[in-house]
Amino acid sequence: MSSLPSFEAGYKSETILDQKLQGFHAGISIPLWQNAKSVKHAKLQTEWSRARLWQEEGEIKLRLTNLYNQVVALKTNFEQVRAVLEEEQVSAGSLELLKSGHISFTDYLVDADLIWQAKSKFLRNENAYYALLSQLKVFE
Image 1 (cartoon, rainbow, N blue to C red):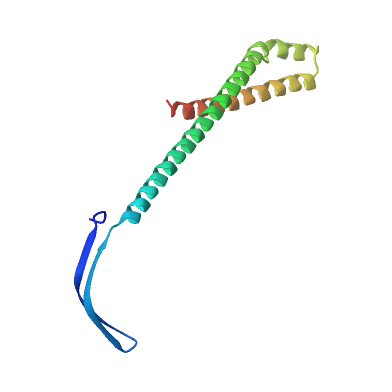
Image 2 (cartoon, rainbow, N blue to C red):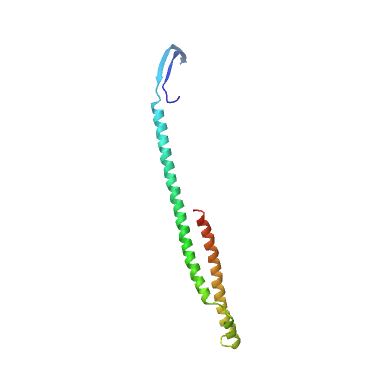
């Protein structure tokens, strides 16, 4: 209804500055500017929605790329530490060397501490790797 022209006709009287005015009144109003404003508003609204969509897509792609890069880096680190741990372990041979006196107790403890730190780092990396991998799975 607001886009259709409106007609008005009738007898009116009003008082302005202690003068009484009376007479017939006729008129037509065509809502051209009102429609133009609503069309401009609708166009701006769609452009804003489109820009917001592009921004959201960009943010999601950025988060996904960051997660992927973190997973790749953690996997590389995880595999390197695993390879090191498979090669070096405190074995019964090290204990035998300690007992026979070929290495000192401090050397044995340093070796054991280094291996313990490597295993601890390995487990932390493994936990972080699988946590990020589960976050990455959400985007599938």
